[in-house]
Length: 232
Figure 1 (tube, rainbow, N blue to C red):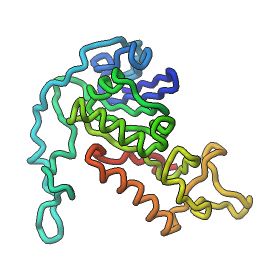
Figure 2 (figure 1 turned 90 degrees about the vertical axis):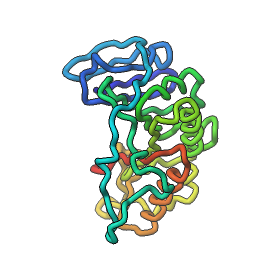
Figure 3 (figure 1 turned 60 degrees about the vertical axis):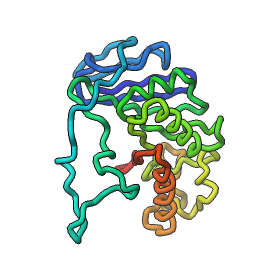
C-alpha cells in the first residue's frame, strides 16, 4: 500500500503490503485527503479508529545473532535486543509513514503520527523552525515518542544524493571534492540535474557520512536510519 499527500508544504507517504481497504489511515482533517493505492485498488480515505491493539508476538525466539566468541549480539544501549522491532500484531494492517514538514508539526499532526507503527522523518524536516533538519528531526521524534513511546522512528539519509544547502547542519563540513566527477564532461554528476552525487571511493567522505548516521542514532528517540538511494 502506498499513499501520498501534499498539503501546505507537507509531503507524506504511507506504505504497507496488505490490502488498502483494511488500512488505518490519517484523519483527512489532519493532513488533507489521502489517496491510497494498494492491492490493485485506489480509494479516498477518511478518518477511522487509529488505536493500536496490544502486541501479540514475542520476537525473542527469532533473535539468535552471536558474535565470533559466541556471545549474543545486543544493542549498544544494553537493552533488550527485541526492542529494535516495532510492536507486532495480526489484528490490523501495520502502518509505515514517511513524512516531511519544513516547520513544526502541530499537536494534532503529532498525535496522528504517534498512532502509527513506524515513522520515517524525511529530509527537510523542521529546518525553518529549528534551524536544521537534524534538530527538526530530533524534536519531532521527541514529541511523537512523548505521546507513544512504542513508535519506531527512523531518520533519513541518502546514500548517493547530497542534498546541499543550509537545511542540514552537517553540510557545514561538506567538501566539494567528495562529489562524483565526470572527467569526460568536466563536471560533477548531478541527480535530476540539481543534486551532487557522492563519490564513495573517498574515505574521508565515507567517514563523514557514517558519523552523520551515528550522530542521529545516538539519541534515544531515533531508533534507526532509513537509507535511501542505495541503487541510484
